[in-house]
Length: 284
Ligand code: GUN
Image 1 (cartoon, rainbow, N blue to C red):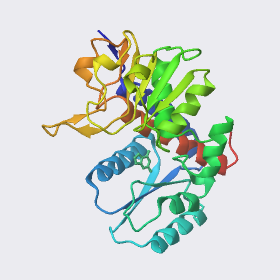
Image 2 (spheres, rainbow, N blue to C red):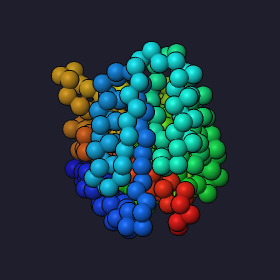
Image 3 (tube, helix red, strand yellow):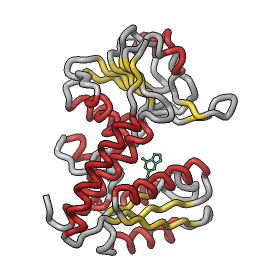
């Protein structure tokens, strides 16, 4: 039976550390500020944005929300981004994805100043991650790395398999595992013999977006299984990409949904925003 990795507890520790450092910054007159932009009325995005704002309050940051209507034009959003780039009181800019169809996400990500890009989505920051000398960590993959660290799970030399090749999770996840000397395989919708590959994984990261996709027959006994998914099952209950009750019998470690990777993404966002505030004020 797998040990359940408690993402809520690990994220609380990270936020506590961010809160401590924020106290020191505030006493020297600097209060980190995150601008959160949400366009349209996607209910999942609304929940994520509310959680991010709540976390800002917990660690002692200021946050400001820009909620724009679903028919906002790309030009209007670009104007707002430019205003936030030029606003010295704003340290971090987060534009919640996905954006409505009329807006080119790439254009928006590119418009955000790399110095305020606390999601680490800008090509400049992605390039730094690829080279390995980054300032901003991609939040969800960095959260996964913290979870592995919290259980002293070794990565070096291990077969690390990621299902999903998104810019937000799969691709940056592969880079962080590679930097720790894992042997990394990325699987996706066109992968042949998926089960054969996942069965070779010592560490399996599921970031597919399909409820309960990963089942016990896809897992090597004793594997570490990290679930990045956030879906609703047939009864409308929150669930991940991993069939938790099935896979927990076979894995050595597993993350739950909710309470696994989700809270870590937010904790790492807080860390990035703190880092942005420090950098912009020439503090190490
Ligand atoms: N949509 C899903 N995950 C994320 C994230 O980490 N950041 C932003 N900005 N949008 C998202």
